[in-house]
Image 1 (cartoon, rainbow, N blue to C red):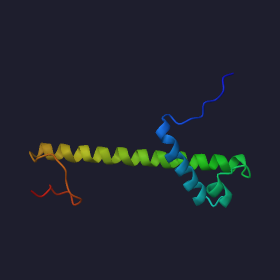
Image 2: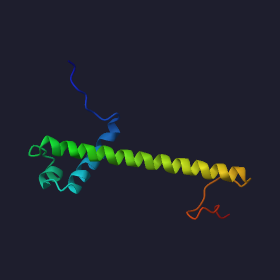
Image 3: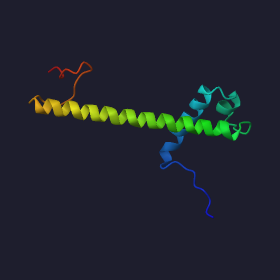
Image 4: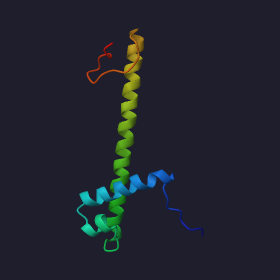
Length: 99
């Protein structure tokens, strides 16, 4: 049986994933040795798995938010196009940018 290759898809993803892991560990009130020294040996498998579960939950929420924002921007652009208004960047209030 080949060894598991439990690595991020890209090398650049390692640091942000580690940062998220330790942030989640802090929020779960795990012992300080986990997020200060990186020692996970005193935790149960259940606690370690919970950290991973919370990480996945956050990543899914972030992806859903990004998709929703993209769909909303496309809808606004579609309405503006349909009304014959210029399609471009808008300010926070939804008004066209000032010239």
